[in-house]
Length: 357
Image (cartoon, rainbow, N blue to C red; front, side, top):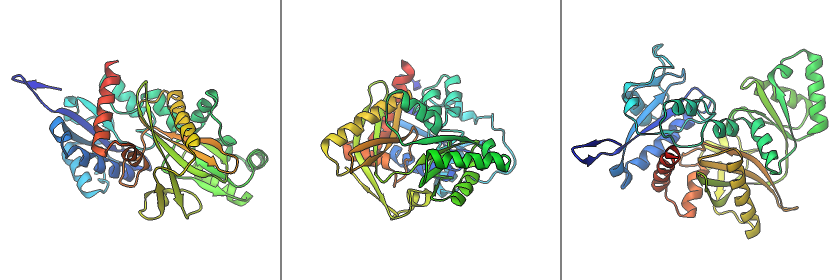
């Protein structure tokens, strides 16, 4: 925060969005919602928002271009100029950073590492928490280390998938024996259900592995379960809080990208209709997961609740969850008593608190 003639000026917040990942458009939509939160009091009196856009080639764009993208909601096409290593000059004036980059090259610890080197405060988890929260294989290893129950899974590499037919056949045999059907094939380092397939047969498994390998060199295959899908939001640093629990209902085969981001294709029930003891256990497990990966600021933790056995299985943690109008994270906190603009304010304060420590 800067001062001039004894007057405290607004804190300059650098809102970084876009990025070179498959979730580029989702990031723009999240940034639009966050921008609106800074336009209402008291945030508009406390903060000056400086939008910074990273195009799909990874080049940082000046404030004018960022504002155009936020206004239009559409990605800015690259004109072949720009350097991914060069930040706009206005970046040197930022007091605190708010990265809302979903997916690789933004949510995975890469941008967090850059901001760490710049020695500036920023919203969200650090390098370790971000990287662990992005990579589903590393995430599951950490969850197991703190004793959180999960579905059966198998880690796979692209080299195994795109290998000779003999190796690929043996891989599919192992998956069928260990995991069985139905199962889900996922890229290890993508979010928003990008590249995910639900499979029920050998031909579908082969096709799904090939598809996921096109997105990432690390893949994960998870056993399918008949369960309710519930989510809990976390807010804080060393002493985080858990929100009410929400439930997602949908008619599609699974919660895919289209269902997640198309109005009317899914329904959120907040709070979820769960026994009090189940809700409490989910909240406790959410905090355990958050601290287990060294999370900071915010996260959304997703679970499977098998009603028949009352078993709760952790699915994954998202360290930079969506902030769109359809997103579960802000809605969970709204139901818990924190309105969207206040939530954004608290995240800024948590970033400053963590940096000071």
